[in-house]
Length: 84
Image (cartoon, rainbow, N blue to C red; front, side, top):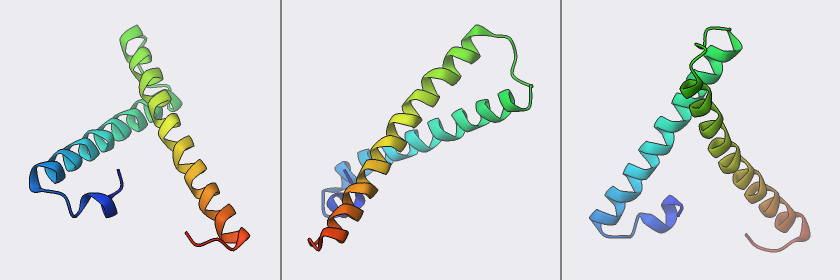
């Protein structure tokens, strides 16, 4: 749910939304850190780290794909003259 829909909810719902957002941010930073280490050749040979990197990268890719589709949808609607 986007912030626009969440900001009018009760405080516990807002706290839950913020906590989920914090977890996504932490996940993203951790995955980017792993990716940076791998690109620099500094990632250990630990199978757990590589598995973690793969899983987190996959989750980020899914979120990115969803965001790209959302932007494309809004652009298509704007070009067609429909209100967003």
